[in-house]
Image (cartoon, rainbow, N blue to C red; front, side, top):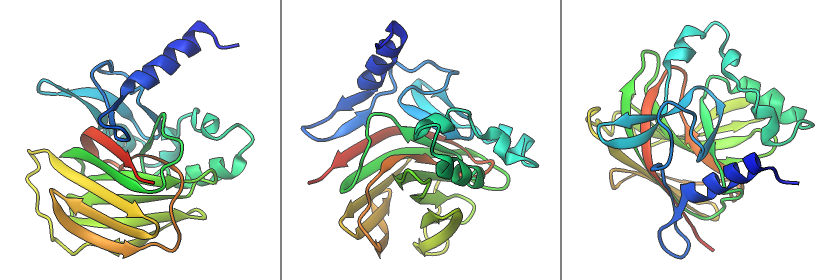
Length: 240
């Protein structure tokens, strides 16, 4: 039986996903509480909190706790990671420990994204080792995932894969091709149709790639080590 608390959480998750058009979904942060973990996204690795940037509510990945615990980054692995795909899925738990260097938060309410567009706005805030902001997608029950990210230390966009506990680069979109103003918000967008993948930075095509197989999985936000970034305007536009 669903309790009152569970009903409240379910309603909050639904309110966080505001339809734009018939199929578009925009994550609404208006009802999120500053200083708390977001309800729209489920943090799995790293420190994700609701913050303010001027008069706007944003999601922040805070790299400072990671830097303080970098001798043992798995300390940042939240207990609710076991709940993500069920307590019996030890394969997921084993893999998630290995990507403790990559903070991720899963979007609630979208269980399976295959074809379409995902976009967001990001702002680089801080980071000593890394300053990365990205879109997580194709998250599988065994812990595999794909991510497209912008790296403010390298000024490039890249597609990465995490498979069988190992992260590998799939394709870089040009070395130092995108030197962005860190004080401003920037757009990151990806589209996938079958195996055709494309990604843009501020409306400029950054990379194209033919995937080995179509994607099918959960989606969310991605970062790296001690990066601190703001995120907002997360929009999902599924396609047939």
